[in-house]
Image (cartoon, rainbow, N blue to C red; front, side, top):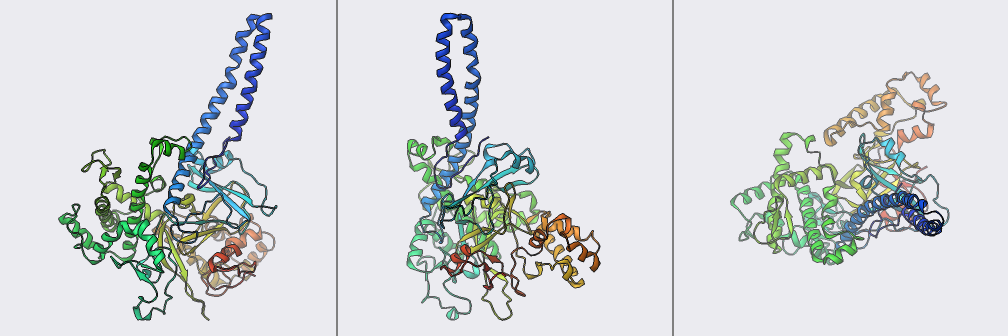
Length: 600
């Protein structure tokens, strides 16, 4: 049994089982040689059977090493992918383009290792329960045992659940699982002048924008004037990493296709397509811009892989040949679910965005002095190094963004009424550690909160080995909390039922699935139980609904939602709060990320 340890940002791991088998066979060969020489003199007829007996362990070793190579090859490809992103993203952790290796403890307490078990094991034909049973889970509660604890997370590909993230070891409540840096990210349209276009730090607070005059507090791109920064350092870094590749095209998009009309990629229809960009709603414009940055990253990845010699590239890949390297593999790995979208949506705004990306792809190649190769192998112009994505493939990329991107949200300052529903400020594609493979739950055991351009992940409760890890795809708010049975009034029950139907409808409309998470199953079971107040009291006196413990049911009912009336926030552990606040001011207490209320 192999555990394919993908050490993010590092090299390969050593398979101890393969090493042990190798030592065993070496000892067996020595013993066989010695015994054969002794027996050949006394009984030559036994030497042939003895020689054949050596084939069995040799075959076992061959298969074990072959399987180990599959694991290490997969591991090395992922390691290379993250080495590339680390090389391209040089900003310190906490700002856009940063990368923190996940196998390194950032707080001296816990380090998290994320692996892709499904890449080396054909679990797509088995159910989740069978795939979990195939893992070597570690149920030791090793947190706090002196020195950094290690928690392990695996990605599985299963028949009944698709891709899932599963704990391989015990994960204590409040464990900071990672600071996930973006593959590509943008400020949304409303916040382009309020937040830095590179690190997404807040530069101008709402209500403090000097009547729209931002010139004294932020700096903009001196060419296109469409992206604003918190300081000159961020402007310079964004230019060298991303914006320098898109600047001229953005200027055309927002000011009209005129400034670079002499470029060869321009056609008569291109101007019409780019004009329609201004007719898209702000959200469509935002995800068009983030996908432009995804294409820039793709362009740079291909150039990165082609610049080194085969020997250099192979050394980076732990023996992987140049042909085995796969630029853009992390984005290609995302599901697109094109069949889930309506024909009207596919042929409408999504196709408009795909056509803008098609034009940008040509602009990118022309402006950088490169030529694309068509995916069919025909060269467009002279020899090029970056395969051209077809319009259909670009439409698939739009579908992937719709299914896998993350919005970044902030909360309004707390007021006496605490009406602080979150509002978006950015949109990003996150590929690090298979962030796009987390499934949804209405009672998630993993919470995530945005900090500038990064996502902070932490465990909401103790998580057992073999348990699926889930995040939430939506905001719940104070009405998501359900009082315990003995305190539940008829109006509470009506509000719960209405919220339940609204939530399921929202998920079906926007994410194209019918939720069957523990929270939804629990709410469905409530409709099958007597709603009399006395029956509810009797049920709550011993165990929760469906045989759950009272603590398990309490987590289903409340999660980490803030207990303050009308607050839309949720509680986070001290390690997360310290990052959000920039200081170690949490004093070891869990508190709400929105209003600051300490958890009781």
